[in-house]
Image 1 (cartoon, rainbow, N blue to C red):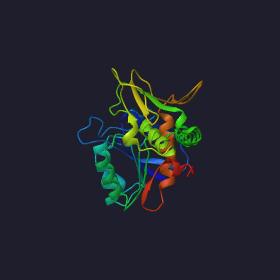
Image 2 (cartoon, rainbow, N blue to C red):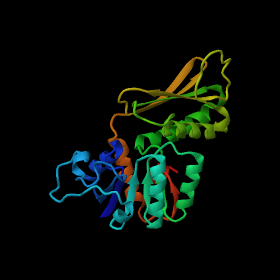
Image 3 (tube, rainbow, N blue to C red):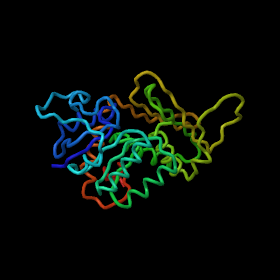
Image 4 (cartoon, rainbow, N blue to C red):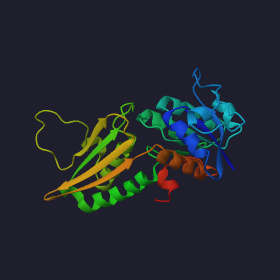
Amino acid sequence: MIKAVVTGASGRMGSRIINVLSTSEGIRLSAAVEKKGHPQVGQDVCGPAGIPPSGVPNLITDDLGAALKAGDVAIDFTHPEASLDHVRVCAEHKKPIVIGTTGFTKEQLDRIHTYVQAIPCVLSPNMSIGVNLTFRILAEVARTLGDEYDIEIVEAHHRMKKDAPSGTAMKMAQVLAQAVHRNLDEVGVYARKGMIGERSKKEIGIQTVRAGDIVGEHTVMFAGKGERIEITHRAHSRDTFAAGAVRAARWIVGKKPGLYDMQDVLGLK
């Protein structure tokens, strides 16, 4: 039985991951972690996770290092600075980690690359199986259509999401740019206003919507003369991301040190 340590345990994603773990086969929650000073520290994890009390309290801790001593893998959906600290602690304890946090800077990603020389890590902006299959489809469509179809991405998330564009939208843009042999840093367009002139063939537009309680929606538009192809993925529940993260946690245990993503987990490479 794999023992999982979940960070950000009382957050939107952490609580859903704990809920999914409660009914998953071959893996169980061994510890739940929150930041120091969080009001849920010392409380039973069952409350935030929305699961019935087990009879044996599993109290939320603020000590990841101590939690890892009884765990096999960490699952982290927090924020970039916290995730960097968590992967550092995992490296010190030689324990693998699954990271679903988005919004990392290049410098932060470089630091993660340093830490994963000691441990295996799954880092993915979206743990959904459907989204990762969509990445594969998008690359095939873009290669086939080439430069004769304009590419636009529109993503929508809840009003509380802090980073924009979403990590998933950026991953889509990277997949598409690579498929049509473009440098995203040069062709990515994130806003349009005023007299902007004619659109170039090389542009890849990435536009952002933040509203209400939208879990996550991504549409890629391939627009040519006389027709338009739209490929859309909609997440109706965070449980789809939680299930993917749990699947990644089962997969990563026992792997060699290095950086992996959900394409590796799903055998799509």
